Length: 159
Image 1 (cartoon, rainbow, N blue to C red):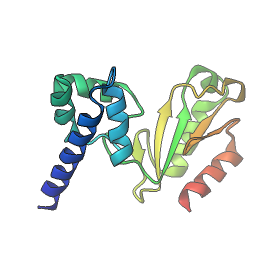
Image 2 (image 1 turned 180 degrees about the vertical axis):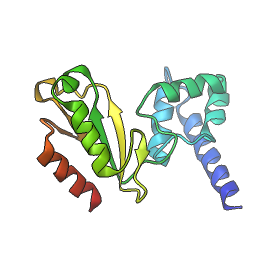
Image 3 (image 1 turned 30 degrees about the vertical axis):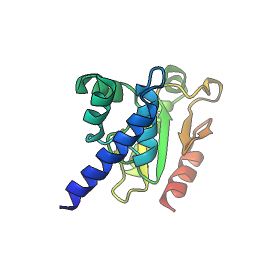
């Protein structure tokens, strides 16, 4: 029963957002951003609302949501850690640092730890190539990722 009322709440709020923003030029991305800001993710229940409001197919909307890595289909953890997987970071030991982070946090890519502390996401270039390997924790960029910095990151997300 609770699930149905949550679905109704999501549908009602998504409808309101679509109605407010559908007159914008190219409204799909701003609507998806607003829905993710509202719920912390883009709920599956919002997709048909968006599709109907913009006269698109559900596949069109889903295709955009699944194409852009910043859109989530589930709520993120309290912290979001993005680790650069681009060539510069790979060349500077990024793969090894990423493996160590995954082991230390006990999560794989696109997963949230069981305690909800952290979500780990790959990202393809943070613009810190001169400071590779790099990561971003809750919007704050971290350059020259090393063992010490990994320990600090793990301690910070576990607080």
